[in-house]
Image (cartoon, rainbow, N blue to C red; front, top):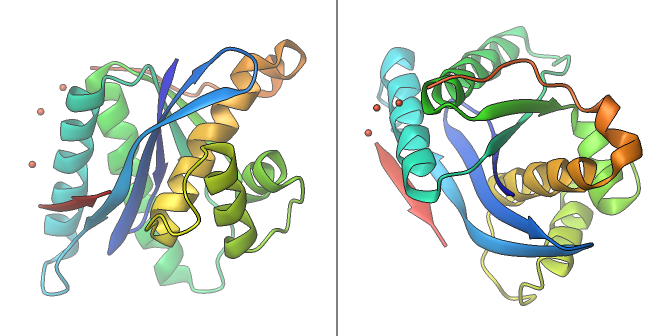
Length: 182
């Protein structure tokens, strides 16, 4: 199973593609960030994110997208912007015909670092360790979070007793911004 993890944001959206096979065997495929230009309108930023996610689904053919579920933010404007970026990611999954799964941040941290309140460095360390990436492997925080989302889904999908806890809100069918990957 190949999973595209997406950490949504209107300025920077992280992505990571991981393939799972066997008991605890995970293979790193790619990861990076979709960066929008500061001078772009929100509509242009969202179009960029949408088009780049569609490119990723076509290039890497994931069978599922793992997306960070909304959380309550202190800044209402930031919460709206994250929600908009989530919506275009959901649309990209639907247009690409791939299943969409959502996980709250604490559930992802618990699955990856065995602690629901792990900080970004702990999550990044465990992502590197799980995927057998070198300690000096360049990995942006947003890309690390996206890889953690993909790994969380793969771990849940492989554990039969946990499958019932996995939410599957939607699926759907597909059609470009700045993308960087490692």
